[in-house]
Image (cartoon, rainbow, N blue to C red):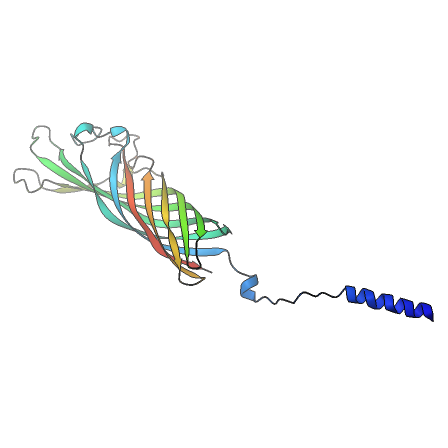
Length: 247
């Protein structure tokens, strides 16, 4: 009988030792299944200007040489969207699609060497589809605001290059005219850029962002193979603005 009592006390003691003292926590589906994806809708106002690769201005129908070259940029508006995956709280990787533009004016170019007084302006408008690959380095500095650095690489598919020749009202000059180089554009153009700014989080799922940005096309706009044209490229300064939605 004494052995039975002893075994009973040992069994009760072991049972008490096996009890868990921690409180039980319950998790909702939103906590367990939180998505790492977010969507960014972009609207980008910026100033775009033309740059010449290797100061190449003479390789064109314009009698305008590098030391005399003048161009002015213009203001444009891009729009598109990005899909980001949150690899970690401070590291997000994204890919997007953008309808992008470029524009500038060659000023006071000479089209006819026999009549050098006939100065013309060539106003250029360029459009393309771009696929940016972005890395978002983010630092949350409060419950509602995060600082962000967003470097990117873009693949650009140019589809339009329209020019307008204007003789600025000279009555003796030829009539104004237009042209396009749509069939002579580079098939693929790469660009690099970076944006610095932040996001204001209205809620845990919705934010508004604004960043200063710069973007530079690396290759010739017009395909240099078999076509006599200056080696033009684009340089953009402006803003990257929009909204972010977590889902």
